[in-house]
Length: 247
Ligand SMILES: Nc1ncnc2c1ncn2[C@@H]1O[C@H](COP(=O)(O)OP(=O)(O)OP(=O)(O)O)[C@@H](O)[C@H]1O
Figure 1 (cartoon, protein in one colour):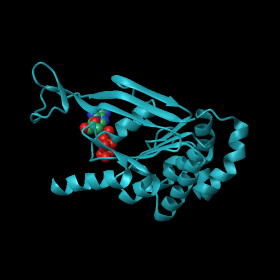
Figure 2: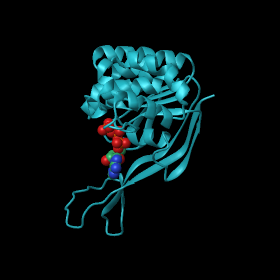
Figure 3: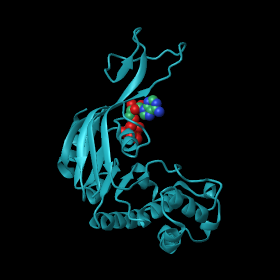
């Protein structure tokens, strides 16, 4: 059964600020500093803990730079945490970076093969899913062309179609789903809903209230890498918006 457990996870992004660069950093504790007081790291996640179990649909919300993408990258195993432990049970697929895993000079069709092979599926499994991926992507003849001729939305259609064709147990999605047009967003939401119905864990980082409320029942609000709230999506979003409007 798919499950994600994060226990006291912290992560610092190293900062490389040239000696000659003048940087105004006020008294924020968001930075790790050297003895001279110069910032040498950004505290992107601070003591983050949660558990997602089968059927969890969780939205990550928070201002720009609050740590959402960093957290997704940690859950995807791309970034190891500096402190704490992340336990992932189940096969996880991530759509965090639109270009990650795509071979830009290869055709859409070739990318279907490469991305699915990279995720551990056999050629037989891939061929049995190819038609469905092609239809869902609606890319038609463009699938014969190199991916570097695609728009951001087209790349997203392809990656999303591949990722969701194989029923991953855990799906990690970043904001870029918003690159899709209205029709695709509607289709993608339906597909996510049926994916979750078949059991799985969805973690979706987004600034869109509509997208979060449509796809998630729980939300985590990150603020400078700290969990400010974790609860029902409507309540957490209301709290977040209330603070934003009083800023
Ligand atoms: N490669 C990096 N090097 C240094 N700092 C980084 C790096 N990536 C992210 N950060 C810092 O880590 C913090 C969290 O960034 P992150 O990208 O996780 O935020 P986010 O919530 O996804 O933001 P957004 O909503 O703008 O996408 C920010 O302060 C950012 O400046």
